[in-house]
Length: 173
Image 1 (cartoon, one colour):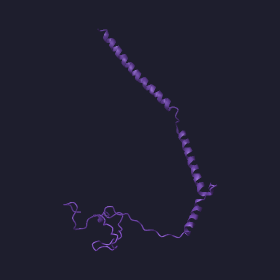
Image 2: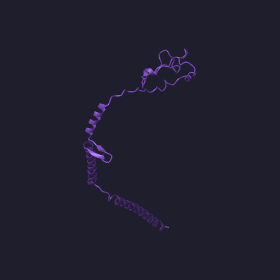
Image 3: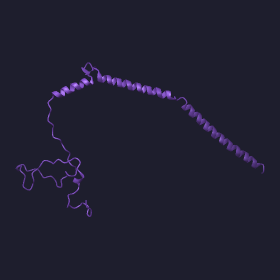
Image 4: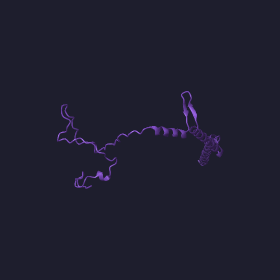
Protein backbone atom coordinates (compact mmCIF):
# COMPACT_ATOMS: atom_id res chain seq x y z
CA UNK A 1 0.00 0.00 0.00
CA UNK A 2 2.90 2.19 0.38
CA UNK A 3 3.29 2.25 -3.40
CA UNK A 4 -0.24 3.51 -4.10
CA UNK A 5 0.04 6.66 -2.01
CA UNK A 6 2.88 8.27 -3.96
CA UNK A 7 1.04 7.47 -7.19
CA UNK A 8 -2.05 9.25 -5.94
CA UNK A 9 0.02 12.28 -4.98
CA UNK A 10 1.63 12.38 -8.43
CA UNK A 11 -1.74 12.05 -10.18
CA UNK A 12 -3.25 14.73 -7.97
CA UNK A 13 -0.38 17.16 -8.57
CA UNK A 14 -0.59 16.59 -12.34
CA UNK A 15 -4.34 17.24 -12.31
CA UNK A 16 -3.97 20.58 -10.57
CA UNK A 17 -1.13 21.53 -12.91
CA UNK A 18 -3.18 20.70 -16.01
CA UNK A 19 -6.16 22.66 -14.61
CA UNK A 20 -4.03 25.76 -14.13
CA UNK A 21 -2.54 25.34 -17.57
CA UNK A 22 -6.07 25.12 -19.08
CA UNK A 23 -7.16 28.30 -17.30
CA UNK A 24 -4.09 30.19 -18.54
CA UNK A 25 -4.77 29.01 -22.11
CA UNK A 26 -8.41 30.19 -21.89
CA UNK A 27 -7.31 33.67 -20.78
CA UNK A 28 -4.77 33.81 -23.60
CA UNK A 29 -7.42 32.76 -26.14
CA UNK A 30 -9.80 35.43 -24.80
CA UNK A 31 -7.05 38.07 -25.11
CA UNK A 32 -6.36 37.06 -28.73
CA UNK A 33 -10.06 37.33 -29.59
CA UNK A 34 -10.29 40.80 -27.99
CA UNK A 35 -7.23 42.00 -29.90
CA UNK A 36 -8.67 40.64 -33.15
CA UNK A 37 -11.91 42.57 -32.64
CA UNK A 38 -10.41 45.84 -31.39
CA UNK A 39 -7.28 45.80 -33.54
CA UNK A 40 -8.79 46.98 -36.86
CA UNK A 41 -10.74 49.87 -35.24
CA UNK A 42 -9.19 53.26 -35.97
CA UNK A 43 -7.33 54.70 -33.05
CA UNK A 44 -5.60 57.90 -32.22
CA UNK A 45 -6.51 61.52 -32.56
CA UNK A 46 -6.32 61.60 -36.36
CA UNK A 47 -9.66 59.80 -36.74
CA UNK A 48 -11.43 62.15 -34.33
CA UNK A 49 -9.78 65.18 -35.94
CA UNK A 50 -11.05 64.22 -39.41
CA UNK A 51 -14.58 63.69 -38.03
CA UNK A 52 -14.44 67.08 -36.28
CA UNK A 53 -13.26 68.77 -39.51
CA UNK A 54 -16.17 67.23 -41.44
CA UNK A 55 -18.65 68.45 -38.83
CA UNK A 56 -17.20 71.97 -38.94
CA UNK A 57 -17.37 71.98 -42.76
CA UNK A 58 -21.00 70.81 -42.70
CA UNK A 59 -21.90 73.50 -40.18
CA UNK A 60 -20.14 76.20 -42.25
CA UNK A 61 -21.92 75.20 -45.48
CA UNK A 62 -25.29 75.10 -43.72
CA UNK A 63 -24.76 78.54 -42.20
CA UNK A 64 -23.60 79.95 -45.56
CA UNK A 65 -26.69 78.56 -47.31
CA UNK A 66 -28.97 80.02 -44.62
CA UNK A 67 -27.27 83.43 -44.81
CA UNK A 68 -27.55 83.40 -48.60
CA UNK A 69 -31.25 82.54 -48.41
CA UNK A 70 -31.88 85.36 -45.94
CA UNK A 71 -29.93 88.08 -47.76
CA UNK A 72 -30.47 87.52 -51.51
CA UNK A 73 -33.25 87.54 -54.05
CA UNK A 74 -34.13 84.31 -55.77
CA UNK A 75 -36.88 82.15 -57.22
CA UNK A 76 -38.53 79.56 -55.04
CA UNK A 77 -40.95 78.41 -57.75
CA UNK A 78 -40.68 80.35 -61.00
CA UNK A 79 -43.74 78.67 -62.58
CA UNK A 80 -45.98 79.74 -59.70
CA UNK A 81 -44.30 83.15 -59.39
CA UNK A 82 -43.00 82.63 -55.85
CA UNK A 83 -39.80 84.55 -55.16
CA UNK A 84 -37.46 84.90 -52.20
CA UNK A 85 -36.85 88.41 -50.83
CA UNK A 86 -34.06 89.46 -48.45
CA UNK A 87 -35.21 89.58 -44.84
CA UNK A 88 -34.51 93.31 -44.43
CA UNK A 89 -36.66 94.15 -47.47
CA UNK A 90 -39.41 91.78 -46.29
CA UNK A 91 -39.54 93.55 -42.93
CA UNK A 92 -39.77 96.96 -44.66
CA UNK A 93 -42.64 95.72 -46.86
CA UNK A 94 -44.47 94.23 -43.88
CA UNK A 95 -44.18 97.42 -41.82
CA UNK A 96 -45.42 99.51 -44.77
CA UNK A 97 -48.37 97.12 -45.28
CA UNK A 98 -49.30 97.19 -41.58
CA UNK A 99 -49.06 101.02 -41.52
CA UNK A 100 -51.71 101.22 -44.26
CA UNK A 101 -54.21 99.07 -42.35
CA UNK A 102 -56.74 100.67 -40.02
CA UNK A 103 -56.52 99.29 -36.47
CA UNK A 104 -59.50 97.17 -35.49
CA UNK A 105 -61.05 97.40 -32.03
CA UNK A 106 -60.15 94.65 -29.65
CA UNK A 107 -62.85 92.31 -28.47
CA UNK A 108 -63.67 91.61 -24.85
CA UNK A 109 -61.13 89.70 -22.85
CA UNK A 110 -62.54 86.47 -21.47
CA UNK A 111 -61.47 85.69 -17.94
CA UNK A 112 -61.58 82.11 -16.72
CA UNK A 113 -64.25 81.34 -14.15
CA UNK A 114 -62.97 80.31 -10.73
CA UNK A 115 -63.28 76.59 -10.18
CA UNK A 116 -64.60 76.33 -6.59
CA UNK A 117 -66.47 79.65 -6.26
CA UNK A 118 -68.50 79.23 -9.46
CA UNK A 119 -70.23 76.01 -8.34
CA UNK A 120 -73.84 76.92 -7.38
CA UNK A 121 -75.27 75.50 -4.16
CA UNK A 122 -78.70 74.90 -5.70
CA UNK A 123 -79.81 74.05 -9.23
CA UNK A 124 -80.28 76.93 -11.67
CA UNK A 125 -83.80 78.41 -11.81
CA UNK A 126 -86.00 77.35 -14.69
CA UNK A 127 -86.58 79.70 -17.61
CA UNK A 128 -89.73 81.82 -17.43
CA UNK A 129 -92.97 80.48 -18.87
CA UNK A 130 -93.74 81.41 -22.49
CA UNK A 131 -96.48 83.91 -21.55
CA UNK A 132 -94.74 85.41 -18.51
CA UNK A 133 -93.16 88.83 -18.49
CA UNK A 134 -89.36 89.05 -18.64
CA UNK A 135 -89.25 90.98 -15.34
CA UNK A 136 -87.94 89.19 -12.30
CA UNK A 137 -90.05 88.45 -9.26
CA UNK A 138 -89.29 90.18 -5.94
CA UNK A 139 -88.02 86.92 -4.46
CA UNK A 140 -85.53 86.46 -7.29
CA UNK A 141 -82.76 89.07 -7.67
CA UNK A 142 -81.98 90.49 -11.09
CA UNK A 143 -79.18 88.75 -12.95
CA UNK A 144 -75.95 90.71 -12.89
CA UNK A 145 -72.90 90.23 -15.08
CA UNK A 146 -70.29 87.90 -13.55
CA UNK A 147 -67.76 89.69 -11.43
CA UNK A 148 -64.18 89.59 -12.57
CA UNK A 149 -62.07 87.56 -10.20
CA UNK A 150 -58.30 87.41 -10.07
CA UNK A 151 -56.69 84.40 -11.72
CA UNK A 152 -54.67 83.52 -8.63
CA UNK A 153 -56.41 84.64 -5.41
CA UNK A 154 -54.33 85.99 -2.58
CA UNK A 155 -53.89 83.90 0.59
CA UNK A 156 -56.03 86.39 2.54
CA UNK A 157 -58.96 85.78 0.16
CA UNK A 158 -58.95 82.05 0.90
CA UNK A 159 -59.33 82.54 4.69
CA UNK A 160 -62.85 82.85 6.14
CA UNK A 161 -63.86 86.25 7.50
CA UNK A 162 -63.33 86.81 11.23
CA UNK A 163 -66.14 85.64 13.46
CA UNK A 164 -67.12 82.65 11.28
CA UNK A 165 -66.71 79.08 12.35
CA UNK A 166 -63.76 77.06 11.15
CA UNK A 167 -64.63 73.99 9.01
CA UNK A 168 -62.70 71.80 11.46
CA UNK A 169 -64.07 72.03 15.03
CA UNK A 170 -61.52 73.01 17.63
CA UNK A 171 -59.13 74.64 15.15
CA UNK A 172 -58.97 78.31 14.29
CA UNK A 173 -57.67 79.68 11.00
